[in-house]
Amino acid sequence: MIKVVAKHIVREECIEEFLAAGKEVVAGSVKDAGNIYYTMNRGLENPQLFTILEAWEDMESLQAHMQTEHFQRLVPPMNEMLECEALLDLYEELF
Image (cartoon, rainbow, N blue to C red; front, side, top):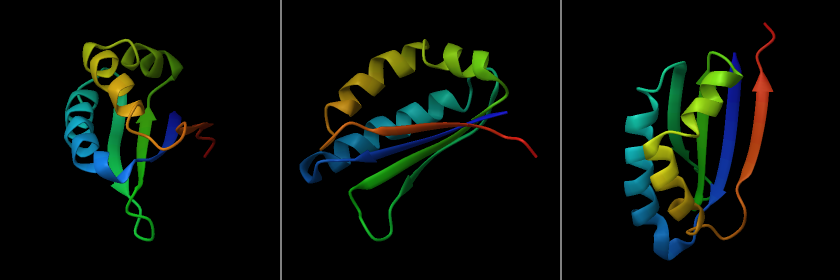
């Protein structure tokens, strides 16, 4: 299983727009083949921090997800709403 932790610091004036796009990304991504879970989470101490937590059956499923229409259409504009580049960490679940 592949897990993804993607942290985003969103410009304050873009939060509502980021959330609207994020809701659509989540709705599409949970239907993607090989998806186990896909959630958006907001920091309790920093309301501008949004973290997407994902789990995929394998790397091929994750790579296919990144080629989907909803990902290609929504994620680039979401990245434009950030204060800095998103931090993306990939993990392989061991046990």
